[in-house]
Length: 588
Image 1 (cartoon, one colour):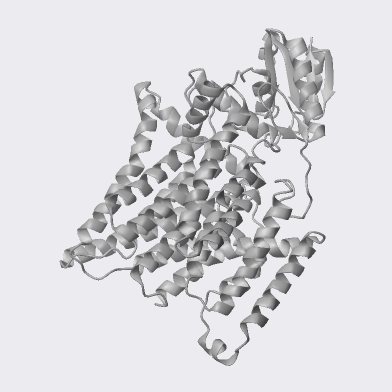
Image 2 (tube, helix red, strand yellow):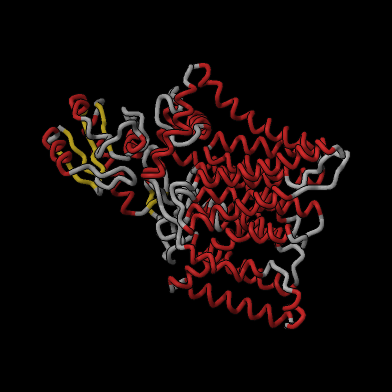
C-alpha cells in the first residue's frame, strides 16, 4: 500500500504550476549554479540552503524545473516511510498504511512543487520519529538526529527555527533533576525561561496581526505547550545528567548545518548581507504577502472531534449504545457529508474547517490531558508532548500568508498526533474517529487532489491539467490556456530578443527563467528590492537604453501594478508590441 501511494504521488509530479513560483525557484537555482551567492548576488527569499540543493540538481541533470520536483518526490517518499514507521507504533499494518495514505492525500498532491515548506514537513516528521526512538532507546544519537534535521530545516527556510524550538522543548519536558537542590532549581529555571521565551516569541511573530483567529489557531496551542513545559518535571534520577546532555547534543547538531551555511559568507566577508537577507528583508512580506486566517468562529467546528479524545465517565456510564449502532451512525453521517461536499460549498467547508480547527485544538487538549494526569505512562507522555509541540510550532507556517495550502504543510503532523492521542480511547469513540478518518481520506483523494490551490479550502471544483507546456526549461502538465499563452510569450520574446537585454516586471521571474535570462536587478520579486517603487523591474528609464525587449506584467502577484503613465512611457520608448495574457511585450 505504501508503494501504491508513491505510484499515486508520481502522477502529481509534473501536474499544474504557479508560474511565478516556478520561475523563482528556477532563477535562484540557476544563479547559484553560475556561482552566485544567495542574498549577495541576488535576493533569495529563504535561507538559501535549498537553492544550493536545486543548483546541484541542475548541474547533474540539466536545467528544468521538473527535475526539482523529482527531488521533492524522493523526499516525500522518504517522508511516507517515516510516517508509516510512526503509525505502526499505534496501528496494525493495513491501518497504518491507510493513515499514511490520509497524510499523503492532505499534503503533497494538492500543490506538488519544489516548495521549501514541503521539505520542512519532511524534516518535522523525521524529528518526531527520531524523538520517539530517543524515548524508546535513551540513545543520544537519536536526539542528535532530531537536532540535525531541525538544523537542516533552518538552512532550508527561516521558519525551520520552529522545529528547533519544538525539539528542544520536547527534550526538556519531564527531564528529571538530580538529587542536589541546586540541580533541581537550575532545571526549573531553565524550563520556565524556555516556556516564557516561547510565548514571547509567538507574540513577536504575530505582532503585526493580533486578530482573534491568529491568536486562537496559532498562539494558544503554543501557549498551552509552554504552560505544560513550565510545570513539568520527572522524579530525581541518577540518569538526569544524560537527559540534559541529550538536549545539549541536539542543540550542537542544530548548529552544525548553520555553521556550514555561514562558511562561504564569512570567507567572502558577506555575513551582514546574509543577516539582512535572512532576518531583515523578509519583513516586507508582512506587507505584500499577507492573507488573513478564516474566522475564529470556525474553531467551533473542531470541538466535536477533539471531544472524542476527552474522557467523560459520567456520560459513558449513562449511555450504553451498541457498537454496531455507533459505527453505522458514524459512517452514515460521514458518507452523507462527503457526498454533500461534492455539490455544496457549506458541506465542503464543514469538512475543511473542522479538520483545520481540530489541528489547532489538538495540542491544547493533549496538554490538558497531560496536566490533569489522565496519561500516566512517562514514555507516552513525552511522545505526546513532542508531537503536540511540533504541531503547534509548525502551524506557524500559516502566518502571515494563511492560504489554505499552508495548512496542508502541517496536516500530516496533525494526523500523527491525532493517532497517538487516540491510543487507548474507547472502542465506540475509535469507530467514530475511524469514520471521520475515512471521510477525510475520501475527501482528500476525490476532492482536494482533483482541484488545485485556487479552490482548495473553498469549494469542490476538479481542475484539468492535460496540456503539455513542453518548454525547454519546464516540461509540465498545465491548462490549455497556460500552455498556449506561455509558449507564445516565450516565442515572441525569443524572436525579438536575440542577444539583447531583457527587462520584465513587476514580479516576473518565470519570464526570465523560461527565456534563459537573468533579472539585472537581482530581485526574484520586485517588492523585495531596496527602495522598490510602483512598476519596479521595468520602471528604471535609464536601463531602457540598453534594453532590447521589455515585458510589462499588468497583474503581478505581489508588487503594485505599473501605473498607466509608466505603461504609456514604455510604449513610447518601445513602439512595437503585443499583448499576451497579462503580459505586454514591447520592442523597438
